[in-house]
Image 1 (cartoon, rainbow, N blue to C red):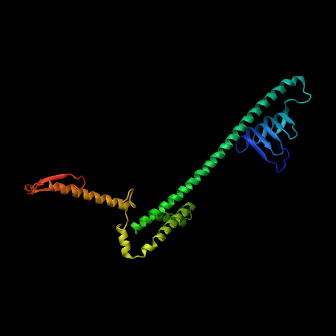
Image 2 (cartoon, one colour):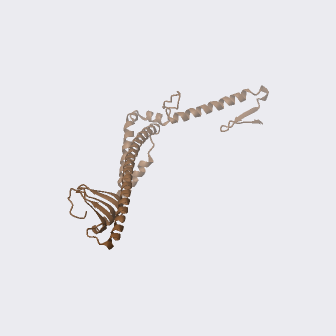
Image 3 (cartoon, rainbow, N blue to C red):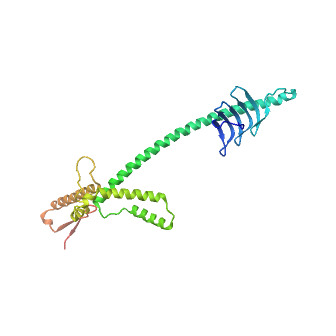
Length: 277
């Protein structure tokens, strides 16, 4: 595989990697039909392995930095070399078996990584939809606040504006702050544009909005239309309940006890009695 290779040849490797190089055990297949299975060292065939060629031939043995140095069975082997060659052949078989196992594990991990990547894309799409929904809710909230309190100023936008101005002065601009400031200004501009026709009604309209008395509250089943209206209804119901309790206590006394006065604690709704001097 260190010989001259056609530039259009594609190599596919499955196995162990280290420092962005083939290192350990693995299987390398080329589009021209050549395949190597065995040990690698720093992106070179090094150790025991076998190479299969397109014509069906196969060489097995020990490689040293990409070159075959010992064959498992060579022609003209001497009798005293048979045991040594048999040992090399067993090492080659063991290395090829381990390389195939690790290659299969690498393919499984690659498939899992692809599935995880698809899951990441799905989560990112959900996050984008959630961010868009949050932006819409934020815009509605700003419109409601602008209607109830026209003089309210969003502190976050002021902070971003000051930070961007400071970084521009110190020549250390941050693109993230710039993007956040532009997004906040777009939202604020949308709120002001939406509330522009109401601002042309004059001072009386702004005063009426400031007192929060023009908010329509539907007393139907479910929650009220606005939170301010629900708070106002709760306060009114508590005042009516205290007035009713005070009236019942006053009616329970006889005329001879007119000198008694009743004081109601507004917080605990408990009655205290004392005699007037």
